[in-house]
Length: 241
Image (cartoon, rainbow, N blue to C red):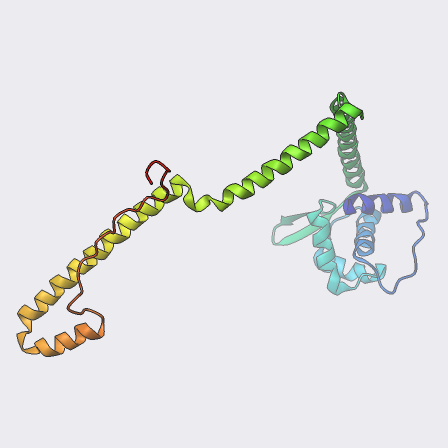
């Protein structure tokens, strides 16, 4: 849209239309772009960057900002550049601006048509959705009933969450986790016994020091493999009592 506004501003000025602007201290970026475009359109020639840096101040654009302004115009395809030999030349013609304006206009026109079509489709869809949903006592009653059912469903779901720990799937997962942990504990217990035996065989003279070390880390005389307790039923029926 900035590109379109810039083109319109220049074409309006070229046609003698005065666009009122509040007085500003210095030029905005759009104003600088317009001033630099005016240099191209008035001369319809080709310029080196250093030539533009000399012409810019005559239009109120300081030479230090000319390079950035020109690059922004190049990025928006309002100014073209090409390398000829070792030099880079810049140029832009009024006809290019007209072509760009027509291209933007066609795009905006297409977007407008598509948006109008989409708006019509949404209006028709809204009308179709309203059919059978007119306000009535029966509909109001059905909505109240639906609301009551949803509230009851919410309450039952919250109550069900209270019994989540007794869920068969949860209990089965816990049993499997216990079995894995039990197997791992006994595997490491077996490794400890193996290590103790190896130390006893290889360092018999350090038996007292090793026993003291074992006691310090919790490997006492009652250290042994773990056994799983008998499974206690979670609930019993009256007949079983």
